View 1 (cartoon, each protein chain N blue to C red):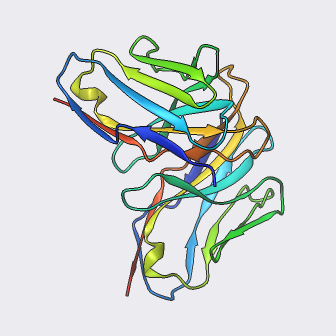
View 2 (view 1 turned 90 degrees about the horizontal axis):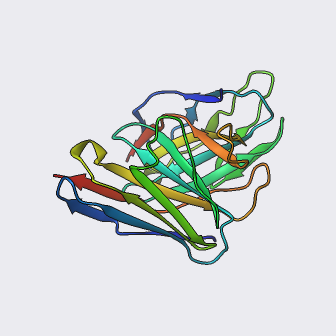
Length: 117
Length: 117
């Protein structure tokens, strides 16, 4: 089956630093990748949608200058949390799909837990 | 906008009990419907899906039927096992409204299932 990896799985950083999270589709080319944020005991909140070679589309309320997304290739997207603060601590999850058809399955990475001190 | 409502948990069942997790949705178009499962410490995995009305998705003994008349996609399993303990997310896929031009998932809040021996 399709596999999506994320790195790192867990990161602890000091307030004010930037953190980069990688999302890779290992055995398929992802036309679209998605970044989600999941708060404890809550659902996944879509942050942005990125297509290879173009700028990401951010959901309302998500700061594009805060959460930089780069979709450099069909197998790699990165999310950089710039000048992280404690309120950015969360579980970040990426997903990818191979096509753009109705009912296309999204394949999820295992998530990255970010803790900002 | 689109939304998904699923029954709140946690749900605790004894092994071999019957499981139902209710899910209803609101969508302006004709969405595809999904159940994803998140096992402890792992990422989300697709459990089953249905792309049009009256379709039944099934996998690993779980099944759900796309009911357009009641806008529902309830998850059922006749006999649960301890290994089914996880968080279950109902989701719908529809064209995003943020201009991304891609099919985006909208998730319910998740239902935690614990199965005891």
